Amino acid sequence: MPSRDRSERRPRHRPAEVIVDGRRRWWIAITVIAAVALAVRLGFLFGSLYPMKIAGDAYYYHHAANLFVDGRGWPNPYVLIDRDTYLPDAQHPPLTSLLLAIPSLVGLRTFLDHQIFSCLLGTLSVVVVGLAGRRIAGPATGLIAAAIAAVYPGMWLSDPVLMSETPAILSCTLLILASYRLWNRRRPLDAVWVGAALAAAMLARTELALLALALVTPIVLRLPTLTWAHRLRLLVACAATSALLIAPWVGYNLSRFDEPEFISSGLGVTLAVTHCDDTYHGPQLGWWSLACANSLRNPPAEASQRDRFFREAAFHYIEKNSDRLPTVAAARLGRTWAVYRPWQQARFDTLEERPETVSRIGSVSLWCLAAFGIGGLVVLRRRRTPALPLLATPIVLSLASMMIYGTTRFRAAAEPSVVLLAAVGLGALLSTALARRQNAARTRTATRQLLD
Image 1 (cartoon, one colour):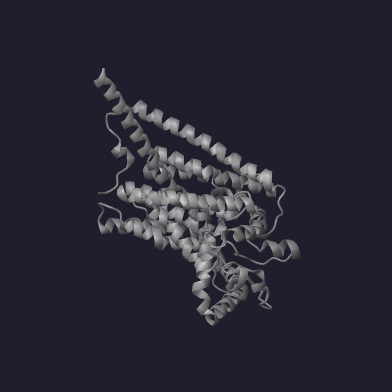
Image 2 (tube, rainbow, N blue to C red):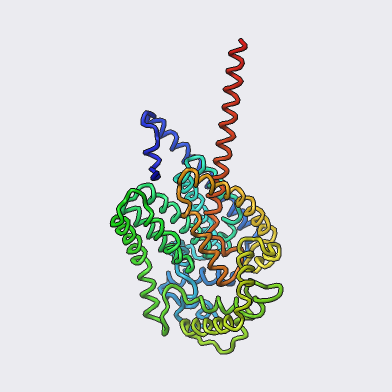
């Protein structure tokens, strides 16, 4: 049977004031949860990280935002600041720095300002998780999902560290919410929102472009009660919206590099640091090593040529060591999902300013949520609610990690799916327990009445 919007399922005899009061209480609850979420993130920032060394990707995003606001375009910030040399660059997709440019526009330009703003973005993700949970399985599930997202380390570890995972989490959560809205309502505007969320995900993390094939296309083509012509029109609306939103960045890149670059020029160096003897054997199996790229002599300075240089070197190594690919891919996948050397990976994560203890707590929490998430999948199947919007991102990121490298933060964009599936399972479990308790109470009451 086709899914219907909650407004269609709501009993018609309920007074409007009861519905409004229920919504008001829900929003009060979600506001309290959001306040807790922000406190957790700021507590982690000021309790464990501040002052944080500005290095690595965080250095890039922070300075790229300020340079953009200053009208300098999109150069390589490392080279411009260290050597006073302007080199066009697209090592990372632009969304993270574009979002950080918002506080920079009003004079909040320090690294701490950007960290706090990133924590606000993470808090916004908690609210969107709550909305998605409410859309999927009702108000109670939405609050459960938001409460988990507020405190689960997988949802907040990247926020004050200033990583692209924060916008990726937000955009993927918006995509989940938009996908379920489209499934329920099947309106052109809902298709536009799906396309916009997909574009945001692509501009946050390049590998999330695979969601166009893994999620958007199949969910639109499976929309119930519609003709194929109607489905195709909605799919065109999704595609056109995404193309329109990413076109300025793609066009900008095509105009400024020697070789064609579309969303990012960072694939080459990523492959170069993940395909060498250090990462194919020994204790760093499935991870990355800067020594891999440093061993390649005289890479070009120009970004697109450099990208091609590193890609070709990585492909050459892969071709010579193809027999190791299954083992390496399995190790990468295991590192990403905390089932292969999780405590070693927690130590590796300290290179990205992630405290080892917090990373360990995050891994244990993931295992617990996964158990409830399996139950959530069963519940969705019984209710005939599509699970694809919740499964697509974990599948895409698993495939990407097997091809590139394994690390805890690589699964970040899939964490909302983990939280929502767990919330559905936990919500169903609590609902069943409450129903049994109420039935037992009625039985006791009826028994007393008979005895009296």
